Amino acid sequence: MTSQMSLMTGADYLESLRDGRAVYVDGERVKDVTEHPAFANSARSIARLYDAMHDPSTSDVLTGLDAGGVRTHKFFKPSRSSADLLEAREAIETWARLGYGFLGRTPEYKAAFMSGLGVNAGFYGDFAPNARRWYREFSARALYLNHVIINPPIDRKRAVHDMEDVFVHAVRETDAGIVVSGAKMLATGSAITNASFVAPVASAELAPGKAEAFALVFFARMDNPGVKLVCRTPYAQRATSPFDYPLSSRFDENDAVLLLDEALIPWEDVLVYRDIERSTGFYAKSGFANLYNFQSSIRLAVKLELMAGLLSRGVKANGTDTFRGVQAAVGELIGMRDLVWALSTAMACDPEPATGGTVVPKLEHASAMRMYNAQVWDRVHELFETTLGGAPLVVPSSVRDLANPELRGLIDRFYRGAESSAHDRIKLFKLVWDAIGTEFGARHELYERNYSGNGEQIRLDSLKWATRRGSLARYEGLVQDCLDDYDTGGWRRGPWVGPSEGV
Image (cartoon, rainbow, N blue to C red):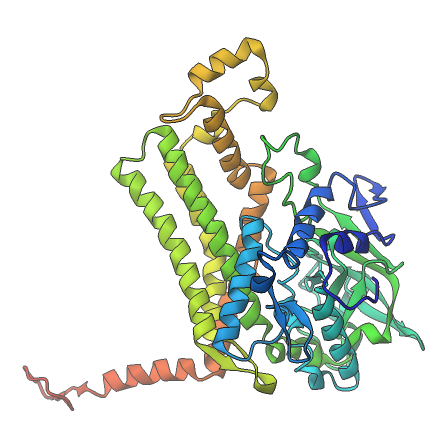
């Protein structure tokens, strides 16, 4: 990464990826992720976001000055009022529309943590200067970070400290920094990011006196010689044409496993070292849960807009748009979008105070969004699959079929829509299938279901937060109020009249 402290352009961003990083696909090390077919279009999709910050038509919506007078993306700086959060929402939405909601871990996602790193620097003790410096570089350049917090699913019934051969831990320390080894998942988009944020998951059980070597929070720059990324099957590389794969050909945020093989992490890139309390305590202190659910709600609302429009146009192409049940399905999807957007409004307009005079979305609203996020895409799939039936499959194998003179006349005749040409109907349903049926579409179903963690943990956190913040006690108190209204002798208070049977 360069040291120039100004917002990257698209060209700057692409150049920042040409750093010799070790990314592996199909058994080979990728020479240049900006040119490799697995990543080139995804990188260009992200570069488009950076260019939008410099485009006169969108720069004022996307960027503003932070407290230090540095121009940055509006979600990259701490918010100090509901008005700031609403402006941040507009900036997030503007970027989300450039990916139709199908780019989930865009650069502002990690701003949910990094935006508060400066004002929360004191939490990190001796490493506070690192927190301030990373905030300054992150915000001034709008760096693209990914994060890895999940341990690989290898014998998870064993204690963390018993998995030294797999889980990320400090091997030793040197004057230059700490040497770490281990693996983390799931590094979404990591092949085209500037650095990985590495930490234990919030629910990690780290035993005092045994797991200090695992109690680490740090940044791993992607050009670190000890960092390797092993990527899953790339969907973009297998996308034969934009017509057949309009989403997967440009928005595939490749997921990877981050391997740290005796990687030297410089002291200046460390936030927590051998401190069990701080290694997971930063989640609550930073307001990350409050803020990342704010970003995800806005992105998901845009994604649901696309899906609502797709379903509406799909049923029109099938000639079923006047059927009552079909109309109800489209209406339900619209209502889902509106609910998600309303939650983002609640988070912006009903915030809670945070460190240093800043505000973050209220945790209760963020928790509700977190739970709904895990359920929404299953219902989207169900609505599409039951309302459109087999229609998304009734398309030719590829765009080349439309170019075949022996087939084209027949295709025009037999593949036309109720109110559209065969070309337009096929193009529409190719988009539908890429959204829900291809490997890319299937990955998004899994992604949305597990976006915020496993289902049980989401619900356990909801209970924990309600208990800690006194909400559950208030709810139980309401029950007691109701119980106190009556007893075996009848009404004990209030205006009610009626039969009383004393006991």
